[in-house]
Length: 147
Image (cartoon, rainbow, N blue to C red):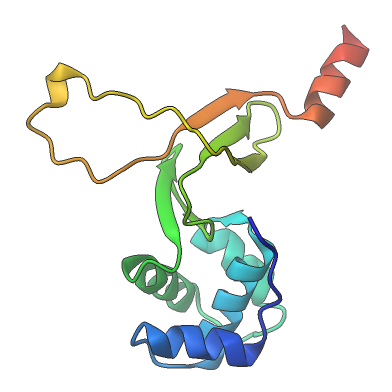
């Protein structure tokens, strides 16, 4: 995924393009998500931004993230009961460390597309997120040192 520097003017233009009103909180939320390519819950993003914008409410973060997801600027998926927001909207898998919880994108040009089981033939599927679990390099190294 290409890295791009997100200025306030670029973030503002993106919001306008998708019919969203440009506000200081929306710009800050957009810039943080899109520039850092991290996975955040609404709570995590609020905690990161509130030192920079003390008046920022958790509700504003939650609503803005859902608005950005609704217009396709970001994606969202559930993981262990939490909604995760992801700025990488390309088709990709994820790797989740079972020890520390680190979540990373796995890019591949030829991701296997799983076939739908017959038991869900009546469902209307809109896509999904595949998550591989294991140990990140740091935790794997720690595990090997103690073994």
